[in-house]
Image (cartoon, rainbow, N blue to C red; front, side, top):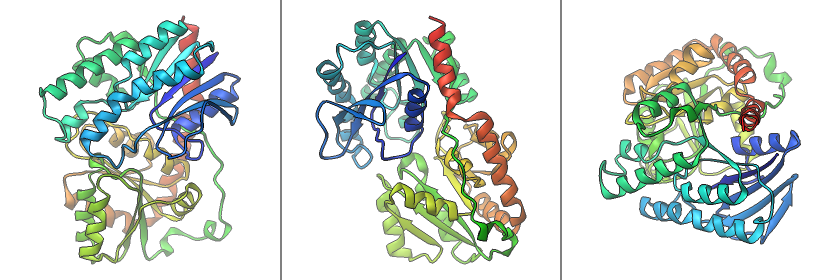
Length: 397
């Protein structure tokens, strides 16, 4: 089949769940087209044929460093820019399936127009439930004009989608109970998945027992925004400044980057290293050397987020410390489904500190938990599962 992928941000230079999906579709023999947003200053013209995929890049401003008004403007104008790019470059192609994630939630009209033109089916990969997440984070007032407008766009996107794939069962139940106008027969489980990569074994570290380590390193990498509760993490790191058995590394950028930089400048913490950006290979090398990967979510969420960041840790057989709201089912994944780590609420500094101390003082469990996560990843989150779901969806038509 011929598949058109709509991504607000995409690059062959950065390893993401979407790159893995595109490459798996290609490797299965499907013809793949990508409409890809990019914030790079120099954008190639026309269709770019690379890695066996036909890609049209659309220049967008960087949303991750923009304020909410600018970000909203980018989201609202993105669909029009994408439609122009399709008409100019791939209008005459045959497309069977259109797939797209959230964010953005503003693609409803775009998807409807492309479905009609191509006579194609559409599949929404629901990764973000907006605008409710903005309400949870107090970035938007419930029942305000803006909230009502984005809620309207959300409904239009769901209406344009022949199938809606949800990251977890909790996501499905949330939509069933909160989106009364939605045809629930369109919902199905579509988990985040990755390409399973071989993990190189360091012979020097392979023989080392975890009990020998005097300090356990905790790492968090990714976007630094309101959803990640960076203020809570910094508070806990400060309270642990006298506990020398734990060290922390934060890698990434975003709207909360200044919070981290101010904290380091003012507090001068000996237990924290901050790196704004690393090339992918250097980041993965640093991640391989860490002992525990962290997933952090705001305690204010009323929607069950399921961040793909956890897959990066499971891929490298790293145990996971999930610090989240009480709604997400990441709690269940980490503690008893995959049995790959620990959970504590992201509004309880004492629970966080106790979890860190427990991890550092029971190091004999780290390797077993990390291996549990990798085995669970291989069995449940292989990218081939995502393509199977899409292929089965098309067989129904």
